Image (cartoon, rainbow, N blue to C red; front, side, top):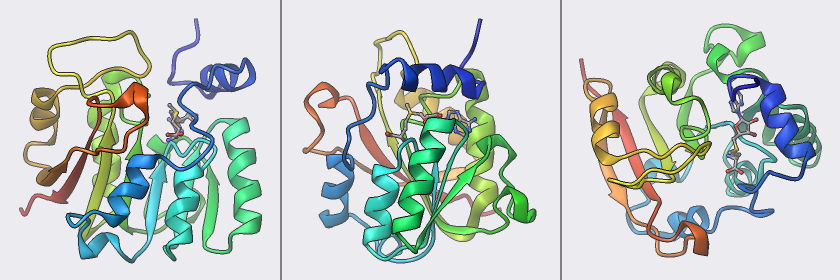
Amino acid sequence: MLTQNLSEFWENLYSDGKDYWDLKAPTPALLEFFKNKQCPAKAKKGSVLVTGAGRGHDAAAWAARGHDVVAVDFCPTAVDALDSLSRKTKNLKALDLDLFELSPKDAKKCGQLFDIVYDYCCFTAIHPGRRDELIEVWHKMLKPDGIVIAFFYPLMNGNTMQGPPHCTTEGELMARLDGIFDVAARIKPTGSVKAREGKEEIWLLKKTEE
Ligand SMILES: C[S@@+](CC[C@H](N)C(=O)[O-])C[C@H]1O[C@@H](n2cnc3c(N)ncnc32)[C@H](O)[C@@H]1O
């Protein structure tokens, strides 16, 4: 039995045409966020790490705004698409890596810190048992004054859904983030795609001061 801890699990979904999360374009909620008054100055420039970037539509949208972007995925179909994007986009780099191996110190495993970590449908794609580890990865890869911009979907308080995507809840997020990140803002997008309406939220996270 393959689990989502393995790249083969994701590759099978891509190759069987079951990549239902892929919107074939940047997430409308992200494009809306770029224009939102609550989009902080910090999110207007700086380097961006995109975790579980898939085919890279959102990574390309960040790059189009002038950010230096590193898009990481470990699944061949996604990495091929990211490679192809990186050949067309000088400020977008594809990284073929299991994101749990990311390191700001090891050049083969990224080797840099970021101003922004952007996550859409990666937190809810990985095995829920690894969520604390993912939060540690965001923290480790972020500059001290950096921000995580996490689009949580499906955020369904009180409801459940077979995953991935595995649902999350406000209570779970607050408990996991406690002492690691402070929630600087929460934004409810109005331009979500139909199936995600009312089920996603953008959280801006800053490192908790020690
Ligand atoms: C649900 S898809 C979302 C893709 C993209 N963020 C989007 O919204 O279109 C999850 C992606 O995360 C990638 N992924 C899952 N676990 C990963 C891991 N441990 N390391 C790197 N990528 C991972 C999968 O290969 C897949 O492309």
